[in-house]
Image 1 (cartoon, rainbow, N blue to C red):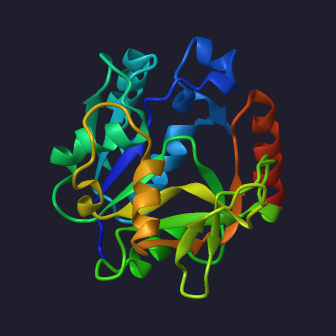
Image 2 (spheres, rainbow, N blue to C red):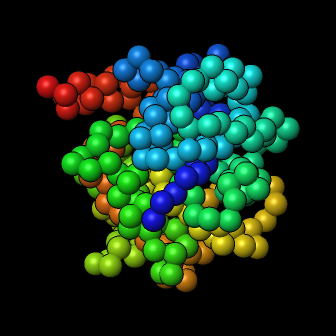
Amino acid sequence: MTISKAMVLAAGLGTRMRPLTDTRPKPLVEVEGRPLIDHVLDRLAHAGVTDAVVNVHHHADLLERHLAARAQAPRIHVSDERGVLLETGGGTRKALPLLGDKPFIAINSDTIWIEGYRPNLTRLMERFDPQQMDCLLLVAATALCVGYDGTGDFLMDGDGRLTRRPERLVSPFVYAGAGVFAPSLFADAPEGPFSLNRLFDRAAEAGRLFGLRLEGVWMHVGTPEAIAEAEAAIRASSD
């Protein structure tokens, strides 16, 4: 399906990226000479997204100035969270009036990957089926990620349906920070701060949380040290 709007989650504190985030928001940390958020916005534009809502909190003025200076698509709409940080779920819920009543992409402003044969956001749009799904998440194989040393997030069955990683078990897939969401996912969602994980769990319990395996290489840029790993992977992919 065609999706024209996106939620770009950019309000986090980026504490693991300190000291770089002492003076800037994490979305303005550079990888390969460009801020992370520009990698994300350019990828959205390439997928045909015309409008992006970006929430701001940490060093909000710096991020707003950067966004205002962008001349390229998509059009930017700022969702201001200076007063209170609403986390991923609360921030997206607050922005729903700007996102409209159709499915939209939600993407972390610091998520970055090397594409495979076909663009992953295009693949997500094509795969999303609102009859079956409340949410379709892009997931990466934990064994093939750069800079990721966690235990994964999900198990995925043959139909692409996701369930949570059982305790004390390493799971094969990690959420890659992007997905297609139906606005109905937020029905009865609370006001104030909460994590999208709460809604993922609810969708999983209803059998309506699905995943699409990322083609290419996902890079987890969580710390200053991880930047060099990501840049090395990008350079290796272009050799």
